[in-house]
Amino acid sequence: MTTIADVQLIEIPKIQDRRGNLSVIQGETIPFVSKRVYYLYDVPSGSKRGGHAHKEQQAFLIALSGSFDVVLKDGRQIKTVTLNKPNIGLLIVPGIWRELQNFSSGSVCLVLSSDEFNEEDYIREYKKFKLFKNS
Image (cartoon, rainbow, N blue to C red; front, side, top):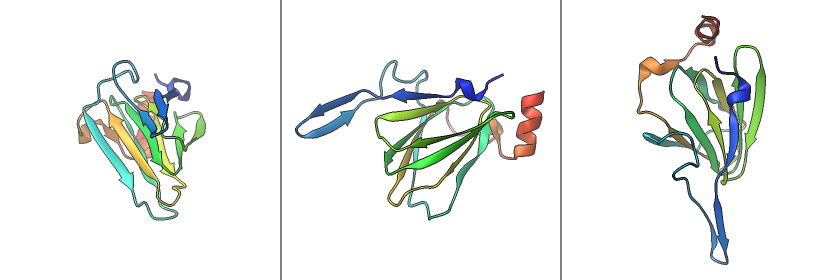
């Protein structure tokens, strides 16, 4: 059973030169091949996103611009991670509840997922998540 200790920050390789920075996600950067990419932007002040867990799917979140907090819960512990650098991503393993909040103005959250959208993989109620973790 996964815990918050299984969630990890991963540094994305950064190539710097006078023209600016370039970061690349390929090969072994993350432990899965991305099958879906989406991004969150123009999130109104005070709004929250996420509010779910996955049974099987992994996600890798990156703050491409601005910042936001990711509140992680494993049924026992709670941890908040602030993402604010485009070369640092957060790997969220299956069985971890996540809520995204405190979006700064102009923030963009890029998400790479290990699988295509499948509603059956989502746990959208925290009460059901607690049951899932205790089964």
